Amino acid sequence: MSCRIEECDIRSARVAELVAEFAPHIVVHLAAQVDVAHSVRSPAVDADVNVCGTITVAEAAATAGTELLVFAGSCAIYGAVTELPVGEGHELAPITPYGLSKAAALAYVEWFVRYRRLPATSLILGNVYGPAQKPHRHGVISRFLADALAGRPSVQYGDGRATRDFVHVDDVTDAVLRACTAPAAGRVNIGSGTETSVALVRALISEATGQVIPPRPGEAHLGDIERMCLRIDRAATLLGWSPRIGLDEGIAALAPAAMEASA
Image: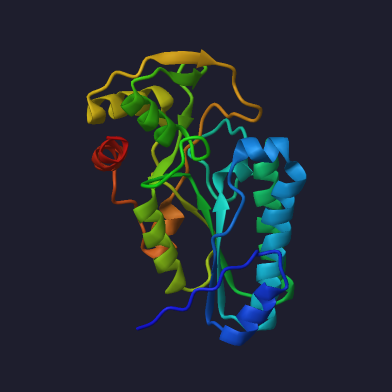
């Protein structure tokens, strides 16, 4: 089996040409601007990629008669929630340009479902972590791990009690594959279903690396939320999916590769 790879900007006219040429049964849309800090610095660029890029992909898929669009969304669409876990029917109240752009992209996908008859499943992802993440772009786990291996204090915003819903990239991959073989399901949360504090992440990384990571106080970023945990029973019902990799296991697997790379 061969695989043809084409590289192009999702905002470009080339997207429509490629989708028309391939005439795919399924389009999986994972491309995005994912750096929250960058979205704050450059909201127009963030919106251009995440909103206009998604419209371009969905338009191309609808025009080509694609049978299913699988879209990677973000739990940033829910904003500063007060009741956990957060279900798919929760109000969308994003508080960062990134969250706003992902919410707008989701709204456009749902418009294409209603008015262009493009079946779609939108996977609303928790905080995804895994190998090859960039510490300066991809969140607290990659940053704490890099700091532990460098033997330096790691910036901690607040008292460490802020929580996230961390999900391993292998579990996300499994969810995408299951979405491709299931009927269109609309919004589906994909996370661990577990609320995990930043302090616990620090402790797990210290245990996995054998390095103590002293916290260094830092100012909270614009748009930082206090708590997040996703309700994931809809994924089990509609996709037959549930997370398999616990956070302790996932971090323990990341540490040896990161230690080897830094040696």
